[in-house]
Image (tube, rainbow, N blue to C red; front, side, top):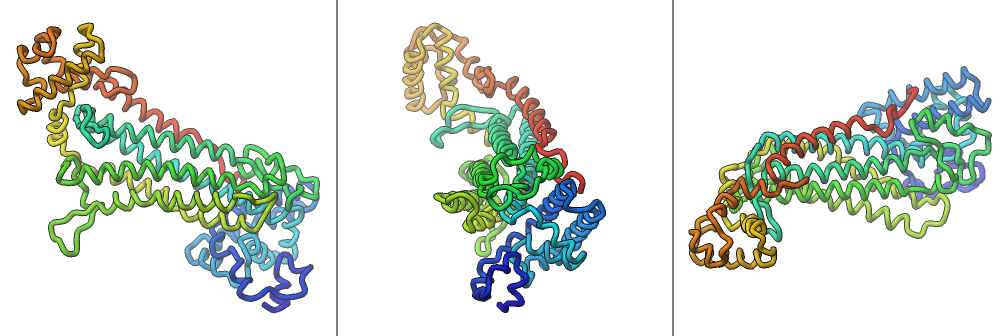
Length: 481
């Protein structure tokens, strides 16, 4: 790099020797932080407003600066424009790029914008804006998938399936009840992300490089314009804080885990051994060798994505470990992990469409729910209602199950005389107590699989999803844009 080229740097005044050319290329971040252009423009406009209030800019200068910043954002909104930012020959980072473009458009006025601020606070602000936007996109994706699950649950009606513990059949449940279990996971995921958004929603602008701005800026101006709750409370923390990136990635790890659990169950249930699910062809692929195959590629890919998300969270954890206050160049390395998970919102919308296209083999599920003594818990409860202590009832039904196994029949197929060999408490009312519908409806508690409870839970889940989408952290992300 020549001295002339180095003179274009934002920090070149103190240096006599040019940077090593390989190091110069290696340390630039424009190749990935180009994604922050709209956030850099928004933050720069907000800072300009604060400078005008402080008397550094005139009203006409503010208007010219803001118009030029808008023009830069518009000029680089297309794929070609984004490529120009990413591949810029001299810009070190997105901040440098915007400054260069400002000077090209409005001359030395563009150089006044950096008055009273540092790149340390700029990147801290841009990243908060980026993560906040991504959180809203992911929450929208979670709501779309949760809505698809609720609609599928409503359509399933009173369809029944076996539930499992230890991958062994346990008790019958409504298909809707199983689907709603995933809705609960997604609502928790959305709450975690919204909590993260609320914690990060404080504006670092005005923090300077480390000790605070050297001008008497009204920091509430930029914070309000950008939709932040307020300014950050400590300048050292503000410029060095990347907790929000780690928290965001950790929250996304939960999203990935829940996607993976659903994908695993669908993959299993679509096998011939289960036969509960018919994979939609639009989301499946075939084999290049075996003509009969329909492979669950979507669910297998979904199952794998959590590895990339968790890996990003682990990378940021190790990057932040042991960093002294305040800003360190190490923090530049937190950006790529944050950007590497930008597929999550799209993934959620994809799995929502996949869920809507799923078909259940209700006959096969119903058959499976009636075999394997899945009514044994209901049978023990029947004895409890006859004043038999539960432990004793458990043992009596266990004996009855073993006898039925040896005979090759279900509990409801035993005669009353056979049942009474295990206890005199058995009566004719035992048989209606262990039918499939009775076994479902005996779980008549909040959160249970009784038919009335599940119907109410479907309506409740739909209302909670609607409430989720009506509850925005920020009403206008870039107010005044």
